[in-house]
Length: 208
Image 1 (cartoon, rainbow, N blue to C red):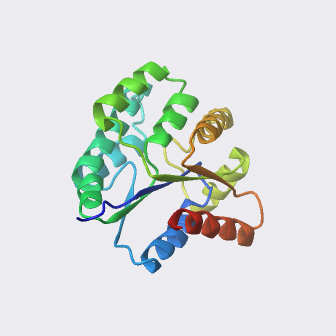
Image 2 (image 1 turned 90 degrees about the horizontal axis):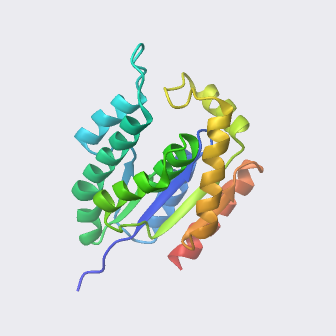
């Protein structure tokens, strides 16, 4: 009987170091002998990538409503989950996601202050209880994270929000991480060598 794969997610604000974490964890998983598929959200399928561009674009004179943003996020997510993540897990492959559902609850729920009942309804419709096996939340102070993000280049529509938006988002992230037994928090404000060491330790402990 074929064993199902595991779904691992990396979460965090802009500038938290998700790309580096993806590289470290990918190496650990493949070194352990597992076949790995990498995804990102929003995105990961042709349609979901088109939605990503839609979400991140500045629509000039047209205001993107918080409701539209939330619905687009879940539309992209359900495309990815049903077309990529679940089929690969069924085949025994491991899937590593750069963001997943925790992002929407943090950014749209915390940052945008969208009613949690609305988000829970969408989660029920699109995910039907599906959750990651393991989540790594990379914690960074919003001011520092935005400074790092700006150093990478031009910011997208969401990244241009004010500091208070990201402070609310971080607070929501931390509250969820505290309640999630399958989530490990990494302090990315420390020296990078220590950050990398903590990430390696976390994934090694999950791999057993």
